[in-house]
Length: 195
Image 1: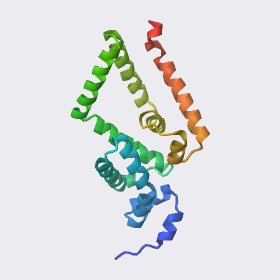
Image 2: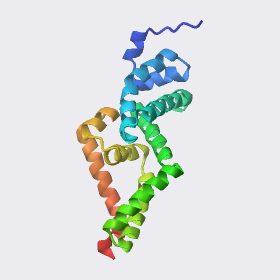
Image 3: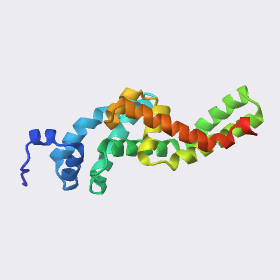
Image 4: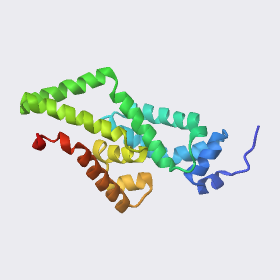
């Protein structure tokens, strides 16, 4: 049996990024510490995204931490661990939502609501604008994508986002303001007001 030169107490003092170095070396105590720090937050994150489905949230949390363990050697310790973790979580959700049966259910509901409330040409314009918006968002850096997803898809508060990513609330507000300004300028030509 291999004994670690670190005690559990020593791991508690390490940054997330340093813990990832130990996890990449196969240290289970470092993994346990990362898991303890983030599992409850991620469980709530998935629970919220999957309409309070506890079972699905638990499955996704387990799968996410399995990915953390499997890809620890690829983690860039110069980057923020929490942003990397939430980007992976967000990508897992996107993949789930892209599942054909889920997509068809959502599109059918969306089409019904749009037809009920808008004219046909407005429906086409909105779908096209949403597609262009999604394309522009995917071209952004990972942290910017994560900020947008947390604020506008998961509807997390500025304070929650700041705590998750570990940056000041003012920085979150500023980043989101400039991201929205940048996206609105890119999509300005697609606005119905400029036809």
